[in-house]
Length: 235
Ligand SMILES: [Zn+2]
Image (cartoon, rainbow, N blue to C red; front, side, top):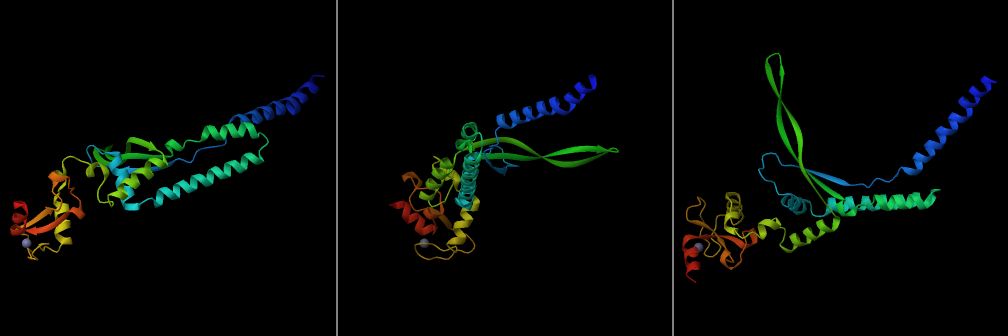
């Protein structure tokens, strides 16, 4: 008699309980995992990195290509899920789980990392090694990125939005920007044609003056000689 009970437990009850439990787990657990897109920025060496500026630079350099590709992958995932739900035995439950998994508002996640040097001690010698440390993250929707992209498009992708709208346009006149304009204009005054290869007397002029809302962007900058620059200020 006792052997029969043992046999029943081992071959019938226990397998039955296990299969019921696993059935419940499958039913309760959501099979849907929203395909967030993580994009990492290495901001080593930057004191106070502004996430928006990094996003703008990404959009200036790569346009919407990568973002659009990610979005179409997300839409393909969504389509696949809906097809799976149609085939599922637990349609209602799966559909609820699917809706709960959607998170388009935070679809794109930008992560800031910094490289930090650590040391390990081996036989009285300190060896440096680098670790990548996350210092912050920011998430947004596709629409947020598309809106920024459209604003950048309006200003010809000439600057990140925070700089374009900055009150201190003069402080944006960096050495690099001056050099860029001097090379572009071939060290030549854009009014009289004077050539100044040594840079002596070469001015970088705001075509629309900063005082009148002109920006420190290439399309509003040009090379002038001292004479033409002086004449311009007379007006
Ligand atoms: Zn000139």
